[in-house]
Structures are given as C-alpha cells and as structure tokens.
Length: 554
Image: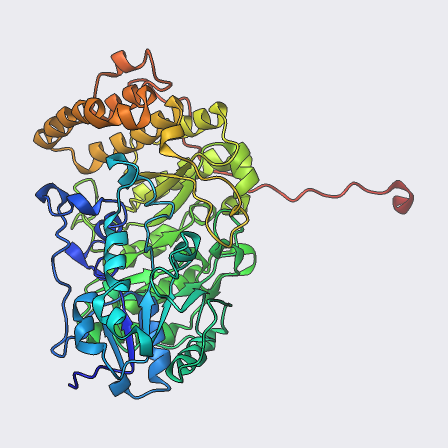
C-alpha cells in the first residue's frame, strides 16, 4: 500500500460506526453522554474501544449511507482509488495523491430530538461523545496537512447541524450535502477530483428507486434499507413530507447477502415506517408483502437475528391480525430478550414508535396524519389499544414523546400525563425528548424547548417516563437502591442550580419516593388507577357525506 494515500477517502466517526454490544440503544447514548466523563466505568461505554478493521486498515462497518456512496463511486472508479476508514486510520490513506475526503455526518453535534437533552444535565456547555468524535475526525491532522490539494465533502442526515452552528469554514468543509444524494454523488466527486470549486451547500432530491445501488460492504449493525420516505405529514419531520416508496425485494435480499458475506449475523431492517413497505392506497398495510419480506430475510443463510427500526402504531390497531402474522419472524428472530416476554426464548421485537403527545389539540395541529385512518380525538384510544396488541404479541416498543411543542399549555401537558399514567404497566421504553426545530420541516422557524424553562408539570412527565424505564429494565433491588440514593445527591449538588426547584419533586419520583408524599405536589398519583381504559376496538370514522342540495334532489 502506497503511503501517498488514495484518491478518494470516505470516513465516519468511531462513535457513529460503533456496534458496541450489538445495541443501537447504546450507540444512541453516544449522542447524549458528555465526552469529558466518558472514561468513567459507570458509563458502560469505552470510547477508546477500537472498531474492527480489515487487514489493510479499512473499516469493517460504517453507517449505511456511507456504504451507498461507496457503491456509487465504485461504479465509476477503480477499487484501488476508493477506501473507507475510521479516524484512527486516516494517516494510512490521506496523502499526496488524495483529492477528496467524504465524511458521513449522522448526528455530528448531538442536536436532534432524542439527543439534544441529556448531555445538558451535566452542564450547559457540555459536549456529547458524538460531537467530540466527529470533531476529532473533521479536524484530523492528516486532513489539515493535505488540505491544499483535497476537497472535504460532508453529507448525511445530520449535515445541516454544521451549517446551523456556522462551523463549515472553521472545519475547512468545502461542500455540505443535504438530502438524498444518489443523483449527485458521482458528479460532485468528479469535480472534486479535477480540483474544481464546489458549491458550499447542495441539496439532493429523492432519486428514482432504480438509482439506489446495492451496497458492496458491511454497514454498521447490518443495516439494510427497505423503504424511503413516509408521507404522513408530521410538521416536525422532513422525511414525513416525502412520499413513502419501497425497494424491490431482490434488492433488499442482495444487500442482506452482502452483509452476511462480510460478517454480519444480525440484520437491521431500516425504514421510516415498517408498515409502509409495499403499502396499498391510503397507507393500507400490505401484510402478505411485509410477511414475505421478513420471512425471506430470516431465511438467508447466515442470518441469525433481525432488528427492527421505526413503525407507526395506527396500522396495528387498524389490522389487529398484523402482529400475529409478523411475530414468528420479528419476535422469533429478534436479538432482544426480556424476562417479561412470553416467547419460549424470552425474545421480543423492539420497534421505534413516535407517540409524541397525549394532547389531542397539539396532535391535530402538528401530526394528525400519524393517526390515519383515525381522527386526532381518537389518539388516546389508538395508543392504548396499539400498546395492548403489541405487548400481547411480545412487541415491546421504544416510544418517544416530545416535551415543549410550540404553544404547549399546562392542560396539554396534563393530557400527556393522563396518557402516560394509563400506560404505566406497559412493556416498553419511553423516551421523553424536547422539541427541536429541525431543518427542512414546517416547524424549522419555531423556538426550541429548553430544559431550564420546563415547568413542574413538564418535569413530572419527563421523570415519570424514566421511572417507568427503570422499573421495567433495571428492576434489580440493589441497583435501584444505589440509583435512588444518587438522585437527591444530584439534585442538591447540581440539578437545582441548573434547572431550579421545579424539578425537585418530579425528580424524587424517579428516586422512588412514596407516592403518598409526592401526590401533594405532583399531578399524578401512580398508586391510583388510571381513569383511562383500553378500548375493545377503535372504530374507523366514516367519511362525512356532503349535504344534499335540494334543487338537485328535486
């Protein structure tokens, strides 16, 4: 291997490529935990842990988006000219012959919904691990040394964060690519190879599905994409504004075979909504096609497990038989286990489900398409019935709620607390996030929610969610005793100084203080039964008929 480097170097940060304990959850933590404490053993994450490399120093697994770019470039350029690596190997591949470095940015600054919250519990200016690792990549000495003869191109779902924080010039980035890039990658890299100037920012559009290549090498967590887009129209999400489309089954299976051939035993089925795969009219779930796809993936030789990503809860309520059809594959081949599962091997399927709010007013205003074919005022019933059906079939969802949506009132927060109370005994993970105005959404001009401005009711919602998670996933008495002791210590040493006294009693619920004591200050009493009940069924509203015009009737 020449020490002069390669013409095209593609790179992703160590944290965004991590397959630590085969857990997407633990990788997500890297966007929330402060880097300055990352070497302490209670983190359960060692950021010095080296991702696996091939014998020549190239990366074994990187985010799927970078593998798609690699595949497009390999259709045009020799494999001798294109390499994919981690930051620690940049010295091996960036040299005098290098003309372009392409960098993947999934969540480079940690400012998305799920991550722009938790790092701030350690202080206002604390940097999350993801941000520290991305900075280590983009400011690498090898790139700086050879910057006079190479271009730096950054793309990926989080590339907008760099522009938003005005870091493009400081980091020496020639071009930021936003959106889907299949139709512009080759031309952009050819221009960089010729030394031509590049646009500071370029936005890609949704490509024709036949323009999406199959990958050539392994993606982190064995990711295989099955759909693009969504179309349900949630105003806080850019992907929801793009119509859902499905990749052909043979394309999917070829990617699965590539993952297995390169060492993956678990396949992560990636989609914005599992139930939109080969969908029918008006978001109707194509159960036979979905079942065939899952079955076909599990039958590829070498596939031991599968993991699911995102889905919507309303299709489950609309088609109660759906989970019964899919569970032999989604649960039977799942990598996840929990004692609460009734599966013989204690397996369960984990599905990321956005519940977002218990306020039907806010739901109707910002995300009513999420409930279709149901109405916004039926949202509580849809959630309760959907959760019951999922748990019955050993689907334990990873659910999110958004705290601090624009215009949220105390009554809106109480409606979310009411729904949360009704879900108290569910088998799930519930992650409260703060509203963030993401780029290219209908709400990008709105103001972010801030931890320091949360009301006592909002703090109650936040910490009640985490009380549920601790009780379901960390029920060991010795752990809970240590955890409960640490909560008051945190409050008096740091919490009240950062966020004020309004977090005190909600935080004490997380520490398992008696409800008889907390009920004097908090809205909910978890010892009391919920006023909401799971409905037997949720009726789909009939379309309203236009009133007859008398003169036409005559």
